[in-house]
View 1 (cartoon, rainbow, N blue to C red):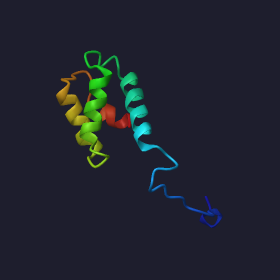
View 2: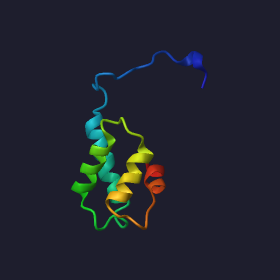
View 3: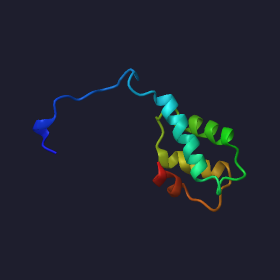
View 4: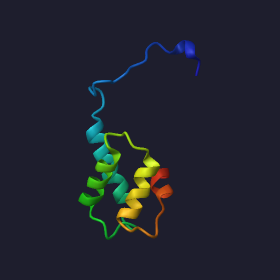
Length: 87
C-alpha cells in the first residue's frame, strides 16, 4: 500500500463506531463454541464471567488471562496457547 493514498485515519475513542462491549461478548461466546469439546464441563456463563473479570477492561495481558482460565477451570486437554492463538 502506498502511504500517499491514505486520506484519513479514524480513531474511535468514544466507542461510537464499534461497540467494544458487544464485540468482546460475541468473541467470548464464539471462542467458547469453537473450544466447547475441550470446555465441556464449563458453562458458557462461567467462561464469559471469568474472561470479563480477568480481562479487566482489556488492561490485562491475554496470555495471563488464558493461563488463569485454564487453571481456574482445570482444563487439561487444551493449553493457554491454543486459546491465545485463537484470539
